[in-house]
Length: 361
Image (cartoon, one colour):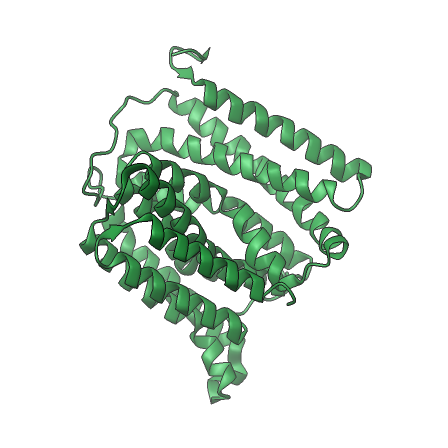
């Protein structure tokens, strides 16, 4: 394999391209932020930098996962893969953009269940025909997804119908956040079992290319850089929204959500193209599950700890309807244990209609 030698193991050509691209994008984003290149260029450059840093985080996690097994890899991939979105959301809350954060949380779930899964089904279906999905695993994850989303949006229902709990949205959101985090903690032991993928197809057992020190170092540097770039991204978000005439709801639901989930967007489609449909489905659907179980409740708590604009789990009726329908569609399409390109096209079409309905706010 051609590449750059690092203490025996090598960085592949694609590793070097991602690393070089990430460094270049961060430098350009920094210049655009501090020098001032108009309203749009800083936003675009910081968005590209966030995406490339997310890809670098994903590669580092994969290298560490080779040592710890596929179960731990999945947990690391989901947790660290959401780092860019966590940083973006925290800086947005610091800037008082609560509406953008609420839309981004729901938008991340929608993007994975509709857009990313749809693209994966289309790519996999056109290359390999109908692809198999472990139906038992699909049912198990779908049930957890429904439970998590119900707990996530129930404070919204209480507020809409004006129950006594509706006037205590902050306290109810805190309770829901703690319950969701506890549910995630209870699910960890099964997820961390080494050697159990839960997949019906073999996963490559190629030896790791990177030393542990290199993988950890890359992960630390990419995570730190993502924190700075996320700040620049949020700082450039409002000027870009004004320049393009984009609403807060659309910016959060589509732009921030897609930028913050770059790892799942790219890796899930690549796996489907390689005919690893079970693995692709597991990665794609675990991301929205982790958003509901970890990211959203963590942001509720962290917004209070850091003294930022308080985030509660009271979403607009349109956002709640959209996420419930997305979960329902994903369950119906995957419960038969099979996917094809036409189902994928239908998912993409639904996402396009949902996204368009938020263009005006």
